[in-house]
Image 1 (cartoon, rainbow, N blue to C red):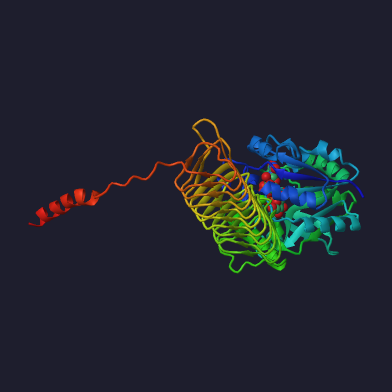
Image 2: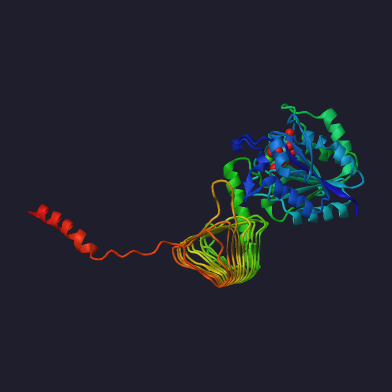
Length: 469
Ligand code: UD1
Ligand code: CA
């Protein structure tokens, strides 16, 4: 197979987004549009990717963090001009084919791209444009076919006559080109074509390639949504809705229950196994993995985490952490990054964990804070406990051994270690290590003041009676 590569156009400003960021950094399901395009290119078969940056290039550069090659288009002189900037990159792949994608059309999927590639290779065409039939073709380049049905030209909205405007098959802005033919066509384009706005149209390469004798074809995508781009935030919202429902429906097909989709937003990179239920108001971000038999939600936010099987997360915020099988978390629990919660653990309500390891079958059930801590197995933490992990300068660690019992309202002043099977009495402020099997009581003794009421209360009654007089 020939080597394939991809050029993704991402230099545009996207004025109508009214953003200080490049347009392609606008997000669909919390994932920037450029990542959708790059992932689609990669999964669609492109082995090497080059991104054309321009407006706010350094923001895009930082985001890409060296993952892909980039070239800069200093002046935005059109889609053809943008591809010219990547000429050296295309030359590196001169024996193969190059995919050109628009960075602002995130619904172009890998399956459409690879199907179009198969069609491109089978036909032996010099260029294969990915098109779609849409209800509202306004604004898109129209696909003009000849009497045999093969692609003749792409006519931009501005240049289309009344008949051409009626064509409902439009250019998606994604194409497979024979690398060598594209480079040749770009040269002609730079010499010959400028429109009134001095733009170089990539779409004009189609006619150039066709008239050079190589074939030009259009691969019509099954799903017309693949052509949709986001030029403003309303269109971005519309794309979000389409992408959101696509993902929810495909999860449902794979066996995930979503009885009501209200407020349910799931990242395209999340994996959820069958027989898990997602309840309203639940947002699942990043490369989160969720096992089977879980109930997630209502109103939970799960970001870049691993959740094993049979876990319940009810009104939970979970960030970059692991929750093992059979654990019940919530309601109203916040688990900050770098936590590992063991199997069959009980956490919440109103509990915060941070950088904490919690062993199997441990229970931290009410109103507690556990930070920078290592809690063993089968521990019971009473209501209202806290690890005192910060002394104003350093963060310190708390270690609690297996089977310990931390009484209600215990403060564990770190660094401190509680031994296995040890107890702390309710209300204790523990500042020193507690040995295995011991009980630590660290609070002042109770004081009884006899007949206190008869000395104090009559005075108050007296006052009240005076008032009533
Ligand atoms: C383009 C196509 C049109 C197609 C449509 C699909 C041309 C002339 N027209 O029109 O046929 O139906 O896409 O969405 O190609 N870009 C650059 N540098 C530039 C100009 C654009 O990098 O100088 C990038 C933009 O950031 C964007 C992409 O190219 O990601 C498309 O550019 P845009 O101006 O949106 O083209 P359309 O007018 O939508
Ligand atoms: Ca566009």
